[in-house]
Length: 197
Length: 197
Image (cartoon, rainbow over all chains, first blue to last red; front, side):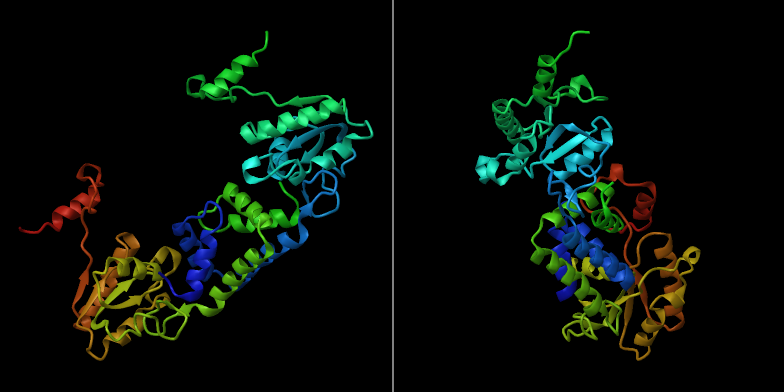
């Protein structure tokens, strides 16, 4: 549609997640209108994130240092580790303020179809962290979908052989949701997980 | 929420039009996961667009050359000029294949509240293009809103003093739309502009 460099930018932007052709065009025109300093700041931010951000040596969370903020915080409870698939999950759990332990970011879930097994994930690192007996519980907080459940089942078995207690996040109705609109599987899990009052 | 460079990138992305905090975060994580070469290509595209793309000397449309594709095309009808607010409007009209003349991109619309008057737009350039008498009609295709209408009225008066015939795009029902759902103003304009069959 457009000439050379402008179309190139629209194409590049259109490959970003959640950016359709219309948004890509809108952003490209915005970039064209912006001051050079503003565009330079975006470019610098893109460069910096690739150079500075890497994975925490201990837990695999994102960090600019060898240890992430959470692993480096002495106030965190180091007797409990919450296992999640990705760094975004750490942030989601942190927002709840419901967990004061440490994390372990697997970097995905077991997915045989895509060739992702335990060796492609940070499973070995997790087992190493459990070796000295400090950790008394592992909360498995992988996603409540097929891959996440498969990963949880696999980890639960490994932890059993190591005699480390494992737990799994509760499945049930989302707070504030309407029972009427809950899908059958969620509603079924809510029944299975019902608690005596 | 996140540390340094990652949060900086999320903030920068969040300032782009149509990119909310959630999308910004999603794009930032995507950038983190991408190969360096892919990110370099995006950065190169951002740089190139600012360096290469500028305004056509004649019409103000976007171009990598002194003259845009349309002004440089000898097959275009140089006796009719369509005046639009911005370069995106040129592309919208080109997609219709309904117009084979030349364009003039004002670079906005008259908007006294924002301090945009004729001097902030490419009005002088338009008048210069009309000076030699080649142009027999000017189609005013500014947006059908207050600023666009004000701009159209202003231009129509200027063109009248120069004795150049001016026309304005028809206002009426959108094709494929439902009369029932048309807003009152559009429906009113459709009545005013009704044609005998």
